[in-house]
Structure formats: C-alpha cells, structure tokens
Image (cartoon, rainbow, N blue to C red; front, side):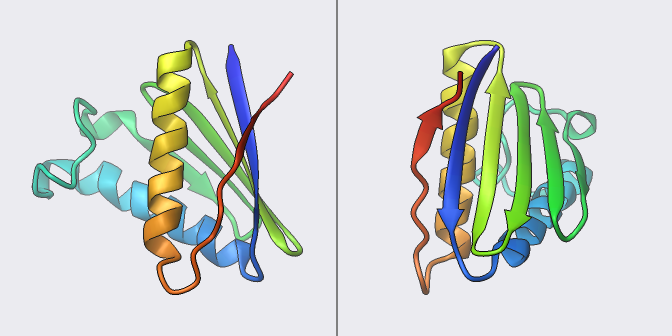
Length: 115
C-alpha cells in the first residue's frame, strides 16, 4: 500500500472538508449527467463512495481512498492506493480541487510520503 499525507493550513478546515465531500458525493450520484470535461474519467457512478461529518471524511474511489480530518487551523489529508500511479492520481485530484475551492485565498498542499 502506498500512502501520502498533507497538512493544509487554513482557518476554515471544516468548510473545505465538507465542500470536498459534498462535491464528490454529488459527482458520484450525478456523474453520468455531468459534461465529460468535468467528469472523472472511467469511474462508474456506483464506484464513488463518500462519508463525512464536519470533522472527518472518507472518499473511496476505484483507485484508492482519501481520508480527511479537520483540526483547529488545518485540514489533514491522507491518500492511500495500491500503486504509485494511483497514489499520484489521488494527490492530483485533491490538490486540484483544493486549488479550485480556495481561489480567493489559495491554500498550499504539500504531500509527504507516510511510512
């Protein structure tokens, strides 16, 4: 198992956690109705599973899993995948979406390998 983690410093960690989870939950339910440019490639609708509260969240995709935890002052993200290619795919997915959601005050996502 390949694992990588990021600690994203933000004054509103819960907001970003919930926004990410709602986004992917909606994408999972309505994936076939989205324009192709915004859809996740090669992911059937029933293969995106999302669970969350204001402080914790889990995204399960065919390529791996992303675990989110909001703590005071930061959002902790952990991605897990069977191989390095899919790990990179998950990292890029999270980094891209955090970038979109934080356009006004860009957040920095720096991935670190986890032992």
